[in-house]
Amino acid sequence: MAKRVQGKATSKTTAASKGKAADKGKAADKGKAADKGKAADKGKAADKGKAAGKSKVAGKSKVAGKSKSYRVAIVGATGVVGREMLRTLEERRFPVSEIRLLASERSVGEILEFGEEEIRVGLLDDKSLGGLDLALFSAGSDVSLKYAPLAAEKGCVVIDNTSAFRRDEDVPLVVPEVNAGDLAAYTLRGIIANPNCSTIQMVVALKPLHDAAGLKRVVVATYQSVSGAGQSGVKELEQQCRDLFNMRELSVGHFGRQIAFNCLPQIDVFEADGYSREEHKMMHETRKILHLPDLPLSATTVRVPVFYGHAEAVNVELQKPLTQAEARELLSQAPGILLMDDPEEGQYPTPIDAAGRDETLVGRVRVDPSVPAGLDLWVVADNVRKGAALNSVQIAECLVADFL
Ligand code: A2P
Image (tube, rainbow, N blue to C red; front, side):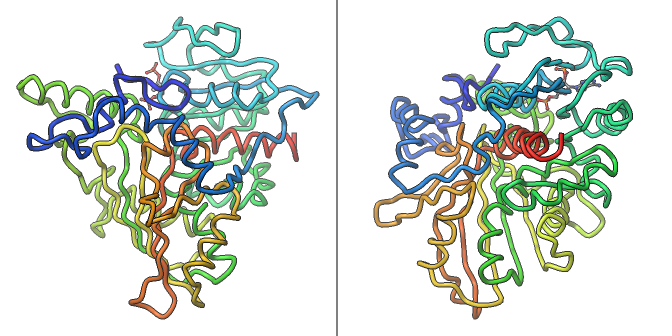
């Protein structure tokens, strides 16, 4: 089974995600050897990133070393995002006095490490959510709809990584680099929603452009990794790769079609207007986070055979023109962004560069000549990290710094 270590795939997953599998008989990643592929992972990416310019990671923990500490639960602790939440709390030294790991019956008794401690996974039920200050939920919308209000009733602030409450007007939807000010409304329901992974990385990149030149219209196409669908998505791509290499018949599960060496222009179900639910999430959430309820925006979301990291081609129309140099400067100074944009050196971000990193990586910044004021961008982030776990932990940090 593929797993993440320090925010990146283990060798098993790495091998597959480097596209070593045959794509019509060719190595999918232009014949890169395994070692080369490995070299492209976290460590190298970090060096590359440094070489590319300043890294201003928003939310370098504001609260590490804070004297007060908090009783924290992770609901869905055994999932792809839950495990990353646990790692992120540890890495950022979130002030924890008690950590409670909750999941379904399937995982009760499993042991997960938190620093030096070994924590036993407990069952999520009506009784398990008492005596908590904060709960990070990532166990699916149905679980959140049932248990998040219960936790909030008991005085626990919920940071919910599902889509259960994102559209609710009395639930703030927050990306700390973009709209931390909205957090204050958490008191209305005791619930804060963490946006969809694709939305998060896009709004981080849109925010400085909007502040400088005003957004007029956004068109985005995404290239989303299978980890966005949780463990089952990761396993499915891995299994399909194995089956293909061994000339076995493929089995299709979560994605409904073959995902290995394929691209699927469907994430979640289709709605009456022809857009998928994922596309609707991006469009609605972007407007809510940026406080632009009428922003014209169109999304096409695509699942690609990558294990970790989402990429997005974003076309932006602005109220007034920005030059390529101005846009690059704005993006390079913005919190949470690492500009990797040096076409002459062949430098641009890829999902492998983003795996395990906190920043949203931006490259391929160009002026779109087809409109009076437009830009094209390529935006990449680790969907499990900035797209989910890190953003949730950053929200928790803002909360305890300013409110709890
Ligand atoms: P479990 O591992 O016990 O099934 P992922 O998105 O990677 O598939 O992870 C989903 C997470 O949500 C897992 O930790 C999973 O626990 C948890 N989960 C799913 N359904 C429930 C449920 N009904 N009650 C509690 N936890 C659940």
